Image 1: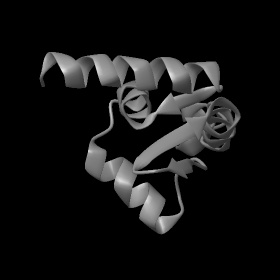
Image 2: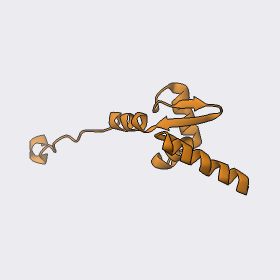
Image 3: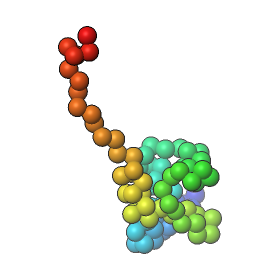
Length: 85
């Protein structure tokens, strides 16, 4: 990546932050996801809501938070082992 591209990415990241959004790269970093996973979520409609502006995807903080909340798993109380035998 050239210095100009890196500077441009920094500017985009700052603008996204000021608008209350994550960039696609930040979403990938948040979940340790690949670009293919995020793209597949968009195509299937299973990931967080997003904004397509030009050729960039932005993910509003609220959409990401809602998506994460939908993935919460409740813990079940442990069943005593004696009752199973």
